[in-house]
Image (cartoon, rainbow, N blue to C red; front, side, top):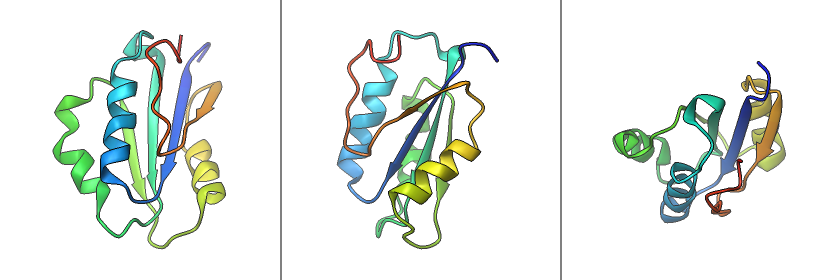
Length: 105
């Protein structure tokens, strides 16, 4: 795909922070059909995957969510996200980086 963006967000813990990151992604100006979001929970103590899926109607973008079965670190999680992405452009965000609305544009 030409000009398709994959946004990879590995994180560990911090339900409040990941919510703010996803809300920032929700506000992006880039049309929703031009990007995907890949979320990797690096085995947080609280199951954030369930939290995100319960609130998925809030998020107006395509996303995939994965959960490591044990903590493997951010490098592993970024690489895992990359391997599962389909974009020809990759943007790595941290679980505490809240994007401004024009970041993807």
